[in-house]
Each structure stands twice: as C-alpha cells, then as structure tokens.
Image (cartoon, rainbow, N blue to C red; front, side, top):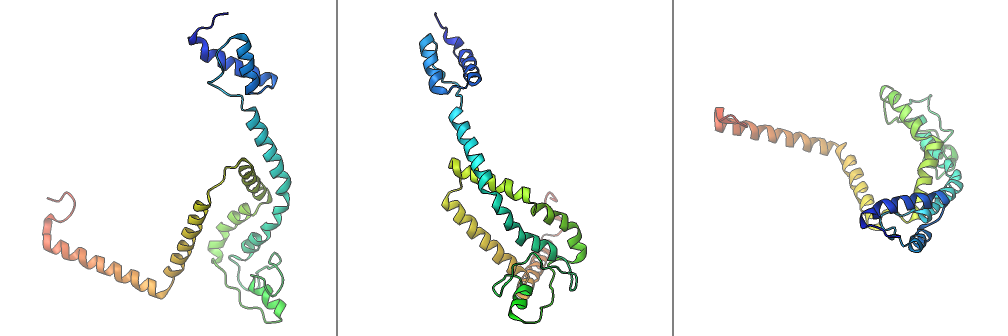
Length: 217
C-alpha cells in the first residue's frame, strides 16, 4: 500500500480516534502504523497515560480531603461575629482554651470578664457581606478547592518556592501598608501631600495663565 505525504495528517487523526475507541496507547498506535506502513502518528497523541494519571490523582485527592472541612470553623466564627454588636455575638464556632485566638473564649478560659465586642463592620455593612461569608464557608467549596490543589500536587504542577516566597513577602507588605494607612500619622501625611499638590497646581496655573492645561495653547 502506497501512502501519500498529503494524507499524513488525516491518517494520524483517524488512527488516534481508532486508538481511543479501542483503548490503546500511543506506543501501540505507533506499532500499528508501522505494520501497515503508514506514517508515524506524530501529529496527535492519545494521552492515555496522562488521563489515567489525572484520574488517579483526582480519586486520591477526593479521598484525602474530606476531613479538611473542619477548617471551616474559623471562617464560620468570623462570619458570625464580623458585624454584630454586644449581646448578639456568637462564639460557638471559636476554639476553646486560654491560647484561643478568640479573646472571648480566651477570657472565659482564664476566668476573666468578657471584653467588649468590637465588630469589624457596622451592621449596615455586614448585612450585604454576610452572603459572601456564607458562600466562602461552604463545605463543598473547600473540598473542591482542596481536591484541585491535591490534583496539581500529584501532577507536579505547583508554584515554585520562589513564587511562594515572593507572594508571602508581598502579602506582608500589603498588610503593613494597610495597617499604616489607618494611623493618625499616615492621615496627616496624606493631607499634607494633597495640600502640597494643590498649592503646586495653583502656582503653575498662575505662572502660565490661560495657556495652562493640556491642549489649551
């Protein structure tokens, strides 16, 4: 049988479809083409081995990540206390003990009076935010995210250590900058910078006159 070079692509496509249909891998497909004297299937691969690896990784991730749903309790604790006032707060999701990150549970374990509740958001702000917290604390969402992470780990597709280190450093700088912005010193600096910019703008306008501005001359 004589094969034309122009038929190479079509032959490869059809052979891959046939290989997938009968469940054989790329090596068997190469051998099959060699027996028939057909061109080697270089254009396409059956990806049988990769598919099996993905399937195995997904099954393993699903089995190992069911227990991670307990990690939702901290987020649930935040969602129940983020915008409530004294007398309406609930700390049933917060961890117990004198080393708890929850100051109410920590005070209770140490036998001290409960500190006043300091909500992060006002009730008017917290009401539209509550559905977001509930969505982010769904057990199915955590399982799906954790499972996908395990699949990437099994496949060896993970961020590099350098990228993780840079991300952590950037996050620290972001938190530090955000914390500094709420201080009185930072507010005074912003007001001073804005005032200086206004004075400079007024001085330029006075010096240049009616021609000042983009496209004004």
